[in-house]
Length: 442
Ligand SMILES: NC(=O)c1ccc[n+]([C@@H]2O[C@H](COP(=O)([O-])OP(=O)(O)OC[C@H]3O[C@@H](n4cnc5c(N)ncnc54)[C@H](O)[C@@H]3O)[C@@H](O)[C@H]2O)c1
Image (cartoon, rainbow, N blue to C red; front, side, top):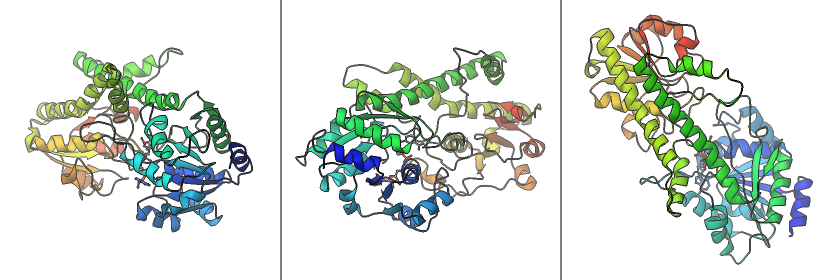
C-alpha cells in the first residue's frame, strides 16, 4: 500500500487505527479518534483495563463512561491484550509510559518493547506515531532503528511520525479534540499523512518540520512550567521572610495586560509530566557536552518545597499551640498531585506524610478522590492507608490541618471552625474569603 492509498483511507475514515497504551493519554485519544468516525482497537498489557472497557466502565475522568459506552456500542472501539491485531491497523499510535530510571535517566524500555511488538507485524503502508513524551531524536533514532530492522524503510515503505500529547487532567475547558495538536513526520510523505490523520481527528493541527522539533516542543512546554513554578516557589520563600504575601503579589502582577503570566507556588511538583520530562532533555544534553542549569535549579527548588512546608508546619505548631511536631497529629488535605483528579503519581502529599512521620509526628490524609493509598514505587510503606472522613469529630482529633491539594467540594469554612491550626499551601482559605490568626500560609 502506498502513501496515496493510506491518505485515501484516512480521508474516507476507512483507516483502522490502533492505540497502544490505554492510560491517561491513550484512552481519551482512542475515544476521540473513534468519535471522528474511525474504527479503533486499543492495545494494553493490563487485562484489568481491557475488562473495564469491555464492561463500558471508564477508569479515566477525561474518558466518561457515556462516551466509552457509545463508541463500544457503535462498534467503533474495542480493546485487547492480543497484539497480533496490530498488523491489521493502518495507523498505530504509541501512548506508553516514559518514566525515569532509578538513576533519573530516561527509561525507554516501554517504547522499545512496543516497537518490537509493532515490528513483528509491520507492513508497507502503515503510519506509526509516537505520542509518549521523550527527548529529541527518539522517533528518528531508536524507534526508526527497531522498525527498520524488519527490512522495511521509513518514508518509503512505512511512515513514521511524532505528535506530543497535551492532556491536562481535570481541565474542563479543553479536551483531546480541542487542544491544538503539534505534528511532524519523518520525511515529507509521513508529514502529509500526519496532517491528514490528525486533521481528521482534532480541531487544529500545528505542523512542524521534523519529529525532533515536535519532541522538543513538548519538552519546552513542560520545562517552561517547571522553571516558572520553581521561580514562584523561590519568591514565596523570600517574600514569606519579608512578611509579603506571594499570592497577593501574583494577583496584582497578573493585571499587567502583557509580558506576565501567572504561575502559583505550592507544596512541590507532582504528576507524571513536570517532575520527570525535563530530565529527558538533561540526559540528552550531556551527549552534546551541554548542561541544563535552569532545569537542574528548578528541580532542586521544587523538590525542596515539601521540606520547606514541613518546616513551616513545625514552626506554626510550636508558635501557636506550643507543641512539637514529634508529638502532633496532622491531617493532610488532598493526596492527589492536583485538584479534582485521583492521580497520586509523584504527589508531594506523599512526601509531606513521609517527612512528618520522619520527624516523629503522626499523619493521616483526606482525599475525596483517593479512598485508599494504592501501591507506589517510592512510598510502599503508605500503601493501604484510608482517607479520613471530614467529620467534626475526626478533624478535632488532629492538632493541625495541612492543605496540600485544594480539591473542589471540601467545606473549607467547617475545617476552619474545627481545626486549631491550618497550614495552607494553596491559598485556598483566602480565596474563599476565610482569614484568621490560626490559618498560616506556607
Ligand atoms: N498523563 C498526562 O497528563 C500526560 C500528558 C502529556 C503527555 N503524557 C505522556 O504520555 C505518555 C503516557 O502517559 P500516561 O499518563 O497515559 O501513562 P499511563 O501510565 O496512564 O498509561 C500507560 C498505559 O500503557 C500501558 N502499557 C505499558 N506498557 C505497555 C506495553 N508494552 N504495551 C502496551 N501497553 C502498555 C499501561 O498498562 C498503561 O495502561 C507518557 O510518555 C507521558 O509522559 C502524559
